[in-house]
Length: 303
Length: 125
Image (cartoon, rainbow over all chains, first blue to last red; front, side, top):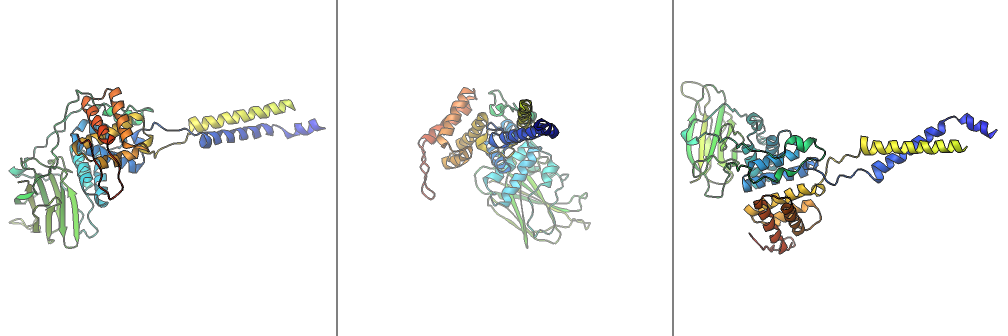
């Protein structure tokens, strides 16, 4: 009688055991003893820690000027476009009011990385809400003033000891990226802003480019030796608005270059955040013989 | 009855094994938002090396300590010393070893002070 009743139950007991075992197995593997990642790599860091790491890389680059090492370190973070990530973070630093050393070093490294200039240009610092027009950059406009020394020093060819693929795809990424071998060529260091006297206006020139229908304010910042200086914060203000940006975000022109689209009829004041004399009452000029708006090329220089 | 019991036990074992394989191998817990203190030792060494490089150019022990604080509860002196040892063991370039040694020595006599007080700095390179 009892046997018959057990036989009537069928194989359900097997399924019950299976489900019970599965539940216990998942409890152990997900809760009681989950896989522990104690030896993680930088690319698995949380976003804010990645920002800290990136800022540290930029500051270290500013300190030692080793671009190859900076590239290798950035590769460990797994950013699809490291230069863009640097510019993004520089922008965020500006928004957060941390527009000091960090933003400067980030912009300086971005400029040295020589990322896609159009991409970097599109990521210019966001203007304030009262901006009359969005700042549009025109990478085709190359200053022709002899004071600009528009030769862009090509980025050094460096051998990164760890590839991005290594850092991203390998289950055990090889962290020897920073163990730069002693024969790693030292890149020619991109000049960065060094403490010194405030910049002064060395030249202000009206530009009329018939191919342009917009008025561009071009800014060039050079050091005392005439070398372009990246990472200099430029501030443009007008009635009810302000825009802030850095030199060096258009490395295709030169590391000390920045530009801004002016609105015809608006009066601007241009100055550098590091002090020095401002230029007041800047307006979009009209080119002679046409109604086309012209632009300005303002060159700052350390005395 | 005993055969039934055996089948039940076997089913539990199979389910347990399946659960473990699924949880540990097929779909393990993923840590995508890790913190710097979980970094592998060599990455930590590189992190400390970056701090040392910055310190070499701009000697600010308080700032260096703040940066190292992200690496966990160890003191900055311990972190710097361990990184210096790791760099030596890992045949880092001599300049890197020197930078880490300088930072390590500087932290040996550094005392964290309460906010607002004047920090004590020592061992500048």
